[in-house]
Length: 284
Length: 224
Image (cartoon, rainbow over all chains, first blue to last red):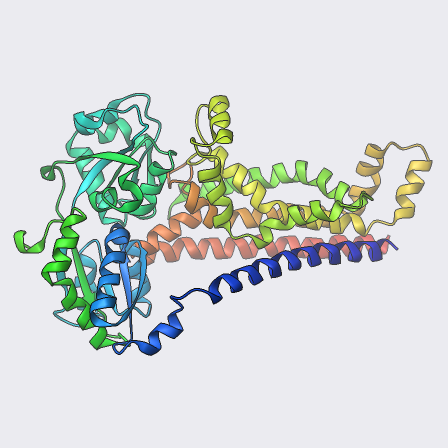
């Protein structure tokens, strides 16, 4: 009796869970059916195929635009994954199938080249990143004083990217140390897994302030929600960002075409609009 | 080897297992013995964390309970801070996330108890609480142990929610799974390897001990 009752109950639970799952699956199928950007239908029309790009999280806004422009110009499909440069490095070292890797730290592409995983000599310094102190518009913090504003005792959390593996986190920590503020706030630091998670922490209001990439501060998602103060460049080592073509690329021509497109004045202007300094004006 | 992260994970897992033992038993009791017709809705809610990705829970804690929402503001006015980036936040998230891992084995254990023994205990004048502690719980000890250990083990293995709402603060929210992730991202494969191996052996050991003693407990029970 008892065990029967139990299994009926369990079937009830299983059924209700399964039904809920089916309903969700059905809804998403319907939603996808009308999706014009279905990858399969597009790839058939594109002569240069699909280029798969791993991009550092600070490129989140910029890469979307660059990819769209390139898709129009070269009639390629671009698939972009954004995330932490360190994570991509590990994934690529372990066989991730990317054609191009836009790192926030040029040392990672160089490392891949020396390991024989990237096409030798293909590393290109595409931009130099800047960092800013960023707060939401409803913040009471006056950041016009700069990093010293972080001395405010009412601040509970300051978000930066993880200095252990994120280039922007390293720059943030270095700037805080040079400004003599690191020891004051080190117990109040929260670490984003990458720079866009650090941005999310402060954008959602869970952190009071954040040290973010200028490119994110200028990106559509954050631009209207907050304001920033540029951290003087003498406080941190320039964030040299490099791109490299992978040797295992399934689409070397497409990858090369995309790399060439990055070097065009149009892309350079776009990157500059996102707050990156251009390599032509900076010595590598 | 990051002993601080290991200690933090143990502290979190022990706390979660303890809380779920206290809170999970009454829930499981109700789920098992209630005759309410809409009970399956509660059962589905309890089972939700089995289905939902951790990102959903992480999202609700980070944004839904963030300082810009009403519940978040309420929480902030009571405790002075929001849930993310605190040990308390991780604890609440982990308790929710491990709920089915405790309640379902508890409930399965209760279901194995012969209903006649429970009714006999009641007719002999024992209270419901007395019957629970002196008849039901001893006869379903295996389920209670399994549920507690599974919630402990599941918390040790938790990653997604912690990554989303933890903020990676050493000694507060940098658990051992996050530490391994960081080591892999920083390409410190040696350190990642050592910690991963310790975790692997530890988890295997804990589960072996539990399943071993559980089997003995069950066979002892059958002999009686």
